[in-house]
Image (cartoon, rainbow, N blue to C red):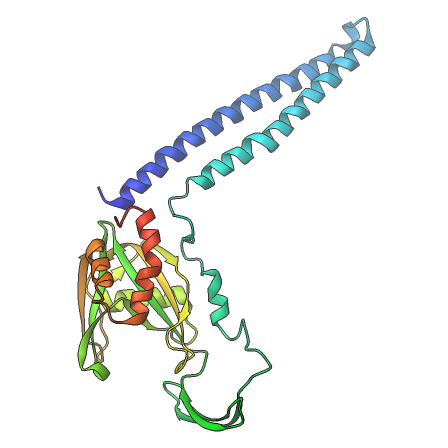
Length: 299
């Protein structure tokens, strides 16, 4: 049986059991409260038949007190215990965020949320844009020691997503992509740039479909990073995609990609053997390793 089906079955059975217990507790509480309210009304309605009015008042106060105690017991003891039990039943391991949420460190990678320090050891004297399409610039810079140099780089603000797709039967989906500067094919995870106005999850979903024809049931953010900060300010935002189903890919004309569907054990054997030479891809695999192990997808 596929892993996600087992997981769903476990959660359904466990949640059903807890809900039954909750219903039983709630029904018991409601029954007791109804009885107390009924007794309270009875004491009031029958006041004329009682010989000792002060006794009736005392009994009514006792009934009210017991009802209040039941309310307090339910609100302070039962529901918190149930909530804590349900939270402990999360199928995701420690450190793996819920579906679609950004990782806490992502804010530090985006300049609009964390601007650079005002006091800079290097001073920009001039800037020349070499390429508007890829935002490649050349700055004339005065160094901290007083000397000057010309610095070529991609400025901050560019974003890209990385995706490690995993199927229900614990198969990892990698790609072999032709990289012209190397004149060779390189094994990588799914990756691509974020378009203007596109959010990170939508970009990851689009890249997964375009490069390997994949659609994921669950998306979990991994820590982001700068891949080569000496030459680029591009921020990389990785995702672990679970429950992936594969269809026909939709590669761009400039992409030459071969899809690799491998057991996760083989994926990580290649990582450990140094067969995945793409640095960002290796880092994404490393970051996802603990979560995959705790989910039972990786030995």
